[in-house]
Image (cartoon, rainbow, N blue to C red; front, top):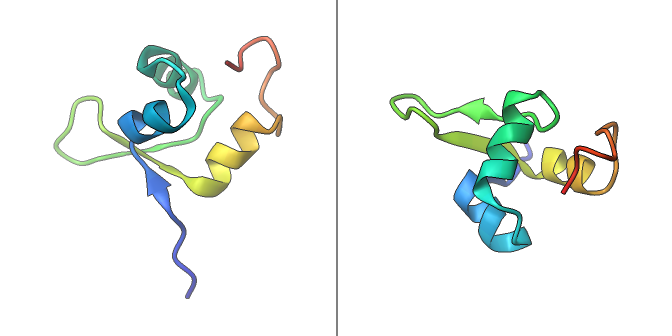
Length: 66
């Protein structure tokens, strides 16, 4: 079984420079798929493949992407 790297919103912010609020907005709008972390109000894990899809165009709406 191949394990896929996942990132928190903070890690994604640190890697890309995209504001955390923008990342949260994309998650809440369904533009960036993420799994909530149990026990955290705003904690999410985002798969590397989803990060690639979102930031490389994928099916995200161009005007909504950072």
